[in-house]
Each structure stands twice: as C-alpha cells, then as structure tokens.
Length: 377
Image 1 (cartoon, rainbow, N blue to C red):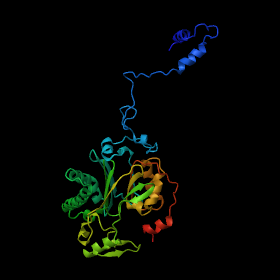
Image 2: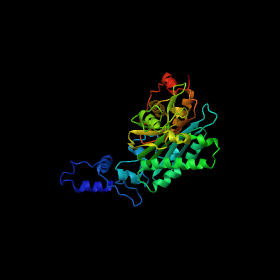
Image 3: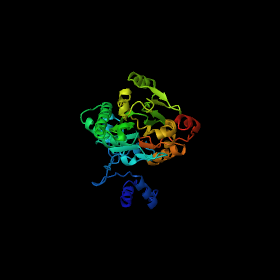
Image 4: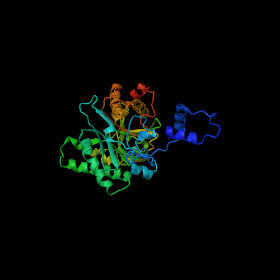
C-alpha cells in the first residue's frame, strides 16, 4: 500500500470535531505500517516451484543425490537409482565404475599372475572379479577374458545369481580344459587359478562366488564381514572330500598343507591333474542385501594381501582413506611393506556409508602375520 493511500485512509477515519487533538502521522510511521502489511507472493510462469517428491525436492529436474540424504558424508556425490529405490522402498545410490579403486603389484615374484576385472556387465548388474594364477598365468588369463561372457550369457536365462555363478565357474573350467586339449605339451596343463567374483544387481543385491583363497569382504558399521571362506586342505569338510576322492594331504617344511604335495587349495579353476583327487571348480556362493546407511565398501583381495593383513586390518586402513582409489593403492603397497612376497591385488567398491565409519585404529600385529603367512621358516 502506498504512502498516499495510507494518508487518505487516516484522514477519512479521523473523528469529526477532534481534528486538533490528532496529529498527522509522520513519514516514518507510514513506512512502518506499510512494512507490516503482509504481501502475497506471486509465482512467475518461468519460476521453479518446490516439488512434492523427495527425489526432486527443488524442482530442478536433476535426480536427488545420495549426499542429499546425508549418507555419503560429503565425500562421494552420486545420484540415486530411481527404479530400484521405488522397488525396494529405500534410496539406493548409483555406484559408478569411475569411483571403484583397484591396484595390483608384482611383489617379489618374477611375474604378476594376478588378474582383475571391473565392468558394467548389464544395465542393472555390475561385475567385479579377482583371479590369482599359479603354475603360470594361463588359467587366470582365460578367466579374465571369458568369465564375464559366461556369466552374461547365463544371466539372460537364469534369475538366481547364485545359480548363475555356480554354472559359470563349472562351465569355464570345462572350457579351459578344452582349450588346453589343443596344446597337450604346453606347460600350462598344470596351470590353475583362484576366482572370486562379485555381482551387484540394482545397487543392492550383492552375490559372491569363490574358489581358492582369494577373498571378498564387506565393511558394515566399520566392521569386516567375510563373504568367502578359504578353500584350504586343513578345512575339515574340504579335507574329507579330498580323501574320499583318493587324494591326500601333506605339509611342507613351512607347515602349509597341500593336496598331493602340490596345491595349497582344494578348489580352483584348472589344475586338471588333481581334478580326480578332490580338487573341484564348484564355488561356494553367498548373497547379501546391502544397507547403504551402514555398508561402506566391498573389497576383493588375493592372498598376497590376505596372508599379511587380516580382514579387520584391511577394513581399518581403507576407512582412513579419502577415496577408494587411494585405499586400493595404500593396501597393496602396505602389504609389500609388511613383507608380502606374492602378487598383491585388491578391488575396492564404495557403498553408501563410505567415509562414515572412520577408524583411527591402525594397529598391526606383525608377529602374528609373520607366522600365519608361513613365508619365512
């Protein structure tokens, strides 16, 4: 309302006969009255209005980022996956391949027989895998090249990802045997590899399959949750199967058990000279649903790291890092500093609680790992 209108209103409402008793309002008083009158806010046609949906609260048209929910701790800013979020009734962040950290160091070996792979296998499934070759890199190379293809073909026919991984491991083992059939005198006939594969569907369904002693570990609430068990000859159920198949277990001078005095694991892809002795390619599988509020990351590691650092130590070190790439590099280098001789390979996949569970506990029991690794007599 203008000052002129206010002045007219004041004159019209003034009682007759008492004009001498009333004072004319000052300019300052009129301005104060004008400011106290509430104004109605009008939206222009081009102005953005707040949206009623929590996935687009500011009406910007951009998807709400996971950091908007206060979970990423301002470290990783990723959009949420709308269809899975609606399907599962909870916000699920999009994990980008560009955020995944990985590292592989040769260590004290003449050759790096470790292999790893990270890919967006389908629109809804991400693929992570580590392979630790022995007796030559041929088996690890074969798995690196073809494992994803076998899984992708099976996913188009089978919904259950645990079933998919089991079939893929068995089929690639047979395919590798056929491949070696054309090279009967090749030294690769005794080659083998571990295989630890993780599939992440819709950003929430995590399925892991593994043979050998490479590992998968989930960090939940700052604590390490093992998703795989090592297939070693001193495991009771594995030892029973080997003996029933006609194999035997021996211990070397360092106290390490071996199948028929040759192989330090009871499951692998390849090692065809021991297939009739109880060494199998069938993986053990595990399925978990992620809780992005509590789950920080997935880590896949080969035994060059596992023999030197236990799962909680790996978890603590990664939780001190700014991003997954720095974490992967630090873990692989730290394993070598602690005395690892084998190749050291790691993949770090960040989830919703990345950076939330910071750990100041970096204690490392060197004496325990010194003994458990069995690399020095």
